[in-house]
Length: 186
Image 1 (cartoon, one colour):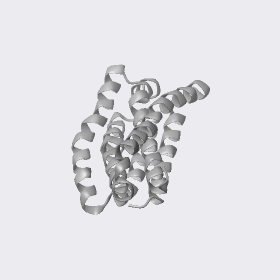
Image 2 (cartoon, rainbow, N blue to C red; image 1 turned 60 degrees about the horizontal axis):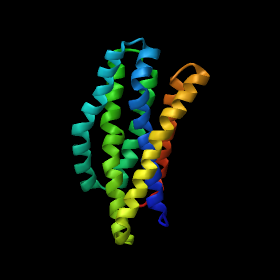
Image 3 (cartoon, helix red, strand yellow; image 1 turned 135 degrees about the vertical axis):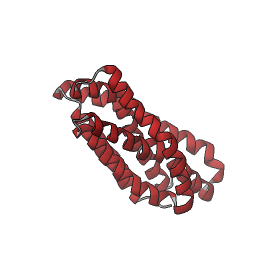
Image 4 (tube, rainbow, N blue to C red; image 1 turned 30 degrees about the vertical axis):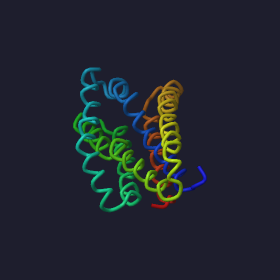
């Protein structure tokens, strides 16, 4: 926790995971309530997220080994923000599918392994004997988003009567992850 770059990447991981928990926990309800889809149809569309993530995470992991962790995260975070915003704005099934596939390919599943490797690289340089402790803190901070995103989004829905505001907030939080990556060192 004494290294500013590690803390920034940990917090960026929280931001990325916030977008993930938003899409996974509220995606089907959003598609049903806001886009008049059946629950089965919304479940199928939400599954596209995971399907896109499988090849993307392997490819992006390879790319990060070649061009660097920071550069790739700074590129991917804004694209993930656009995918989340597209989810909230899309009206047709086609654009909803495109936004979910894009978020699966560019969001948490693709970015998280890169950020974990980034933290691992930094820890091995500055304090290799703290790797296990550091990864425990990374996991704690990241999973904290799984407790906050569903509750906060549900609260926004209760207050406004719409899930769109929760998706806008999710986009803003993922954008904060981008800013954190900008200020972290490779």
